[in-house]
Length: 237
Image (cartoon, rainbow, N blue to C red; front, side, top):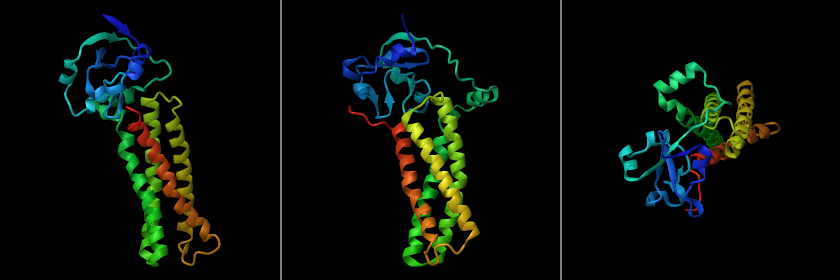
């Protein structure tokens, strides 16, 4: 039976008339006849020419679906020399496979909602003058800082574990903008904690504080956009 390494497998990606091959647990399977793998893209998420052993664990269907298509080879993986997983991490991943992919997606939603809420409640305070809106914005800002640290940490973990810390454009943008957002939010939080009267009159330096709060919305939007681009890449079918 023909043997494939990851490079050879990647060339069978279903594009430009090429075969549509995927791998699962060392088996290379030809799914070219599947209408769900048109042009090598499945459910606008999974790409042909890849080892989908981990991805299939989260699929809504069973492994019996793969039995409908012929195995045309075996996948031979070369050892990854540039990544060494510490033994304790390896044991955790073995015991809890979800740690390979899910920690970052689970945590990233919290800073998104808190940063967006900071902007929204700040605007509501400026429009209505209701002090409780400004207080809520401050609390959301603090929570946003806290959860941003957690989300960024899990993001680096996912990048290291699943992308082997390689330069990926979307990840590079997310890293830079996430750190910028954390710095902006931290400065705004400390400033507001030291000067509770900010925005009461909106004059002088208050405008800078307001700009920091309002900037959180576009910053988190950029982060979310490129995060979605990694999870749900858009390509022509």
